[in-house]
Image (cartoon, rainbow, N blue to C red; front, side, top):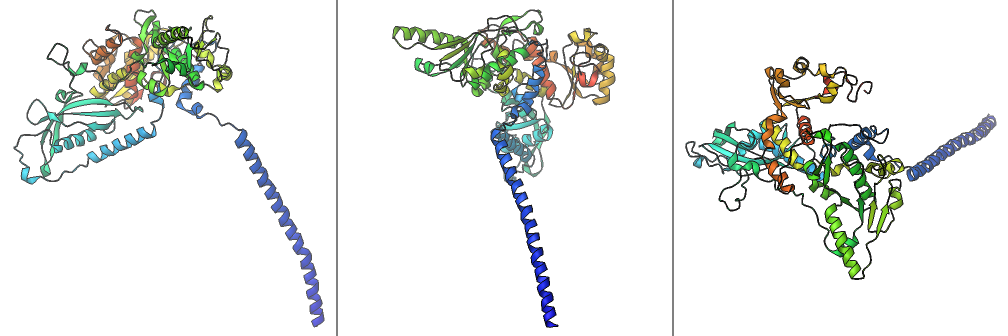
Length: 566
């Protein structure tokens, strides 16, 4: 029995010995296969990571939306006529880390100011004593009031010490702020008159507040006028935060050490502003790709579509429309006349002193791609656009293969701070508490072939019928429009507090800050508040509304670009 049990054990062990290697072999095979798959995956991933170039995030950003929409208008390398205003960098680019931290701090200040509790000062707390506006409790009361009323619309950045108003228990206070919907770092100013009263725990409370910039005693104090003891009114004080002076190149050695990209005037001159920007940013993008300073012509020709005269108007200044200070800070640019003057001066000096000539490479056609110029050592690369249209459009440089390398720096273009001051003042006069409707009429309403329903859909009766369904009655209603007749929207006045751009003409009239500042840019000559400026301001006020109603999304079945283009 023992032997048979032992023999059975041996037989069982032999069978087990046969089974174990098979299972181990299977495990090894599976392990080898898995390991091979893993190695192959790592190899593929390595190859892809080395060779794959991910899509430029620029093409997935809001800037790409503009680029694609503008590129779609170029089937024959020409732009369609369009009197709209492009969004610019301050509308598109997210706040930088520094801006975000500033905003966060300001939001924290907004939140904390509502909860400010000052220690009781019972020994000095006499409700019948005259109000001292410089008392910190006054500022605390004003901060609490402002936070409660305006925290959804604006970010308060800093306050000045309140000063006495025009009557007892009145104080004027000034502050800097930024609109919640603006993504730039720019600051705007407001100063208002407040009436205060004693409150519990020896504090103060605001009983009533004046309108936008009503606290004139807290307004910035302008310098005395020359040969006069009087001061200019607050509305005429120049904005000290605007610095759009023209940069200088300096010495000959500085000039020679620089590398420049110079575009002569092309067929884009006197075209629509959208085409101007598309071409200008192509040139600026090439300069950045080549690591060169762009030679910039500040003279702008405003197309006839923006002028009441119906004619192109030369001699406009880039600084009327865009923020030159921000452009200087975000891109390397030099003004054309300054550059040409220095070029001629140092060229003559080098010939007299037997110095080396300033090297220039002339590029006669846009077909010479930026990649071919990348390593050129010349001091000046001079692109010339002498051919017929559309061969002489600047933006042709960025077409084809070049589009893969040249990125238009949309973040470098902001709207003029002077125009944005007007926007801020219009919104401020409505206490940032308004809705807006964009009513497109003009040529499109007259063209029944491309826009068959637009005229009827934007008639006064249709506007009343549609707007009363989506906007509460007696709200402030700002109407951004190209309709020339002021009284066209009178039927809406029975339902809303209607505001039109022409209600604010004093903001660019001959006693305004804008008027004086632009006249200084124009050698002492008045500047017309032209059609493009009107559209730019209208559009920005629209962007800041609590609720926005658009013509082609909400008011009409027609397509923005005409029939069958939706």
